[in-house]
Image: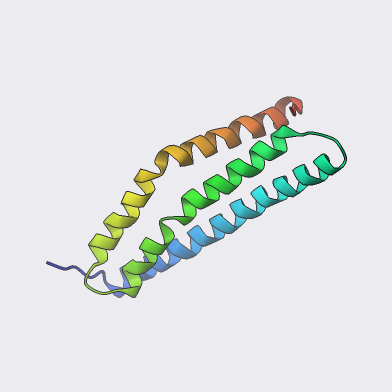
Amino acid sequence: MSYEFSEAQNQKFRKLTRSMNRVVILLFLVGLNALIQYYFDVVEYQRNLTLLLEGLAYLLFSVMVYLPISRFKKIFTTSGRDVEELMGAFNVMSRDWFWANVSLGLIVIVESLKLFDGTTF
């Protein structure tokens, strides 16, 4: 048995993938910015581990958001396998949920330290 979403439903999946792509780009740029700042701190003989952790956490979280995008795209680019592709996208998301939570938790901790007392280590 196969199921095909309607064109209106496919349009919602197109919007979802575009939104997810924008989030991935934003997270990647924030992480890259932190790593570039960390690099220049190291060049100036300053060690700011907070920037390193922040950059790595944002990059990891961007990867966790990026992974299911290709499965969501298959929903509106293939025919007859929409439910299977949807379940595959959810499977990718649930499989990597632990790492998404770890990276998000690290982001919250690092940003909270910077926000409340300017702590860097």
